[in-house]
Amino acid sequence: MTKRLIFLAIAVISLTIATAQERIIFLNEGNWNSDDGQVSLIEGSTITNKWFQQQNPKKKIGDTPNDIIHLRDNLIAICVNTSNIIQYITADGKDCGATENVPNNRKMASDGSYLYVTSYAHTTALGEKYTKGYVAKINIDTKEVVKTCEVGYEPEGIALYNGKLFVANSGGYAVTENHSHETTVSVVDAETMQKITDIDTECINLFGSMAQYGKYLCINSAGNYESIGPKTIILNCDDYSFVTYDFASTISCSHNGKFYCIGTNFSQITYSYDICPRTIDPESGIVSDGIGIGNIDSDIKKMKTPYDMYFNPYTGFIYVSDANEYQSAGYVYQYNESGVLQNKFKAYLQPAHFLALPPSGTGIRNTMSDVMDDAFYNLHGVRTTNPAKGQIYIYKGKKVVY
Image (tube, rainbow, N blue to C red; front, side, top):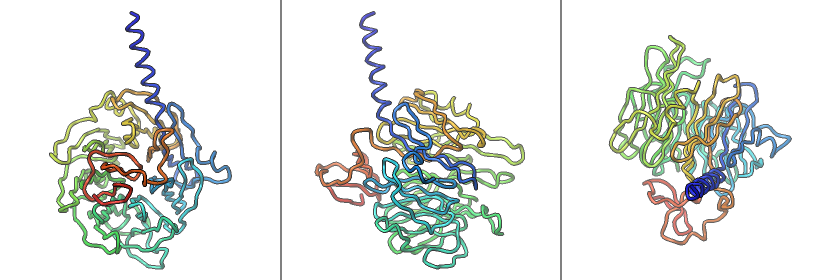
């Protein structure tokens, strides 16, 4: 009995220590056109809603924050869609400037020197007049737009691979415009901001974020919510080939070489959701039903509106959010790496878009000059044993493209 009690005590202490390492920022989109977006912080087993406002008492995050990304050192960017700004904050949530001339901004990618942002708008900060949407290239030091490139109508997800930007175009979301849904992924040279080509996926409405693992992208095709159903596209950025699956990946993220997806296909005919979690191995093309980790699948299927999923790259902890009924508080489920539920946090309206901070006490590196071994580190300062081709890493104190 004594040995068993000691074992249980050690297990509880280990679990407490593991949970205490969690530091997660996430966005609450709020109601569109209501200027009620929020930024929350999870530390261990504690959530702080309105975290950004607490750190900046005289400032709001704005209307509909919809993407967050770590840029470098102690700098984080947040797309605030309806407020038409890119808000920059430090790791402790302090306001450190904004880019205010990328209207209707959507999703972001970065190489550590520049920030690339998709926009639904037609007029750029540099005065160009585009027929369709565009990508803005922002100098992170000056926070100014330096170049732009026209892509497709209502561009959404964006990823950077081997010096190229891959932009998923949606179409159909500007209610005052008359054009068809898009089916293309635009490929743009990140340095020159010249479009190289458009990859026609033959699937309409490439809407939402897209997950990336090395050369592979997981892209959701939402369909038209009526006669044309959703699809999932796995795109190979090396040769532009792709595989199409007959299900939605409305929510997707990558971890350990696999894509984890939650299809939340909404039908305007039945006014109901079809919620299906799946796992895709992009190398083999094998699709498995469910996430397959602990009790996550059963929890997802009980949620009213699964809204996002995220793996903490530092700890392996897993987060799934539920937007509930959109007009009431959402929830964030925190699981350990084995899929055991640790906490269910009450958040704000439409919680999503997660970003992990390094475990407490390690900090975000301000310099990589001390990293002089033979290991590769990502831009968060985390050692990686499986660097992906075309991605930027820190190697012996210098940024390199693997």
